[in-house]
Amino acid sequence: MPKLGPIKHKQLVKYFRQLGFDGPYGGGRRHDIMVRGDLTVTIPNKHGSGVINDIGLLKRVLRQAGVTLEEWEKL
Image 1 (tube, one colour):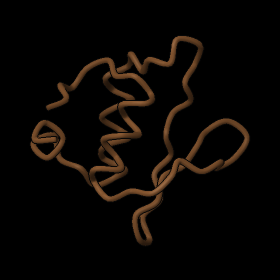
Image 2 (image 1 turned 180 degrees about the vertical axis):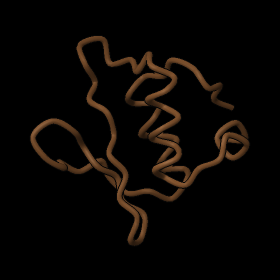
Image 3 (image 1 turned 90 degrees about the vertical axis):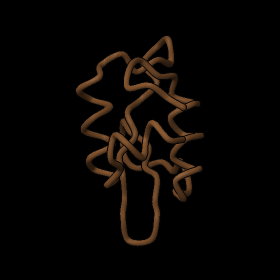
C-alpha cells in the first residue's frame, strides 16, 4: 500500500504496471512514458538518486493517469 510521498522510480513503474500500464518506453528526450490503451502517461526521470521527492509531481502524474488517491493507496 503506497503512501502519497517520496517514491523510488522503480516502485512507481511497478505500481503503474499493477494498474495495467505497459512500459516504460522512451518517450522523448528526457522522460519515459507508460501506456494503457489510448492513455499515455509521462513518467518523471530518475534524477540521480532515483527518488521522486515532489508530492505535487506525483499527484500530477496520478491525475494524468486517471488514478484516484484511494486507488493509489489500495495498491
